[in-house]
Length: 462
Image: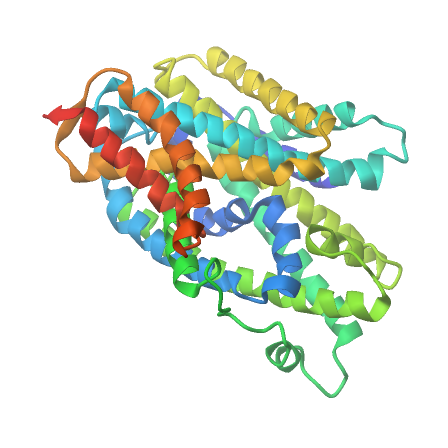
């Protein structure tokens, strides 16, 4: 782990030489689109996906691929609808577009909802991986969890605090490679233990009872997953400063668009790899009498006595890479959004104030992680991710309104609409089954529509 972090720190030192706010915010707009696209695979997957997706196959087969296909169509919308707008307005924080189109209250509301969403989501993701570090290393050294959490955050800051997004574009590439190497090695080792000699891994996986993509059932209907995947991609990538900040490091719009399209294609193959691995892990666990399921399946098999020690080490590094890839960009995007949207900082301003904001967000993430730890995360972690997902609905509604209407919103009523929208959407999800309709992943669309109509009611023709 320390050797791995040492490599990241070396990259951080090289990329942060002569760093300014422009380097931190948008890498001086000279990043390679190919590097950005590859690195965004790791940022899109995150540590939670790394351990969760393989564990889903026992219950839902490979149906998640329909959602990933929805991601692809969502990325096309981002590439050819949102990115041209961001480049035309030359934004640093994407929420400044809301200020240009709708007014200051919408601008601040949109940015605040991003900050809330990213703090909750990043803290939960980082907590899960910090807990793995705690269990695999720190418990045996009698190091308490709060010290582990501080150490993990400090290691991330050590390589990314100075260079910001310029460093992250490079380190994400390395971390994505580690994740894919870990998945490929697991596929090889577990496949060797499960697949008969006369049969290929491909043939074994395609003939498995879990190798289905479409499953009947209202909540998991394929069209709902497709529609939900599209809306999730647009909201959680296209309207997320964390993900878009990487895209906006590319100088030319056409290259940034190529990045998004390639990312969509890559994610189809990468998620298929993790789901195929899930089939092998499930069968291996059944053969060996391993009872772990879901999120615990991959870790349990990778570190079991029947697997080579190399797999356990590579799994740990892959998980660490996934966590760092998610957390470093979260800290950079939170710092950027707050500095630009609430402190009105520019790219030429001294970096001291920006560094204070960065340290402040480190403290916020630490507090949330410790709160999760004190409340026993197993019972609340899924609720936190669900809550973070709900807060993207108002962003979807605000951006859709800004893109389709020539109207201005005066006053802070829009903040009330944005706060109320997730609660109304949640109530709708509870009421819909009484009509014989179960809302699935498309709930985000309904959430956005509520904000859209609320914005219309409060707006005036520009």
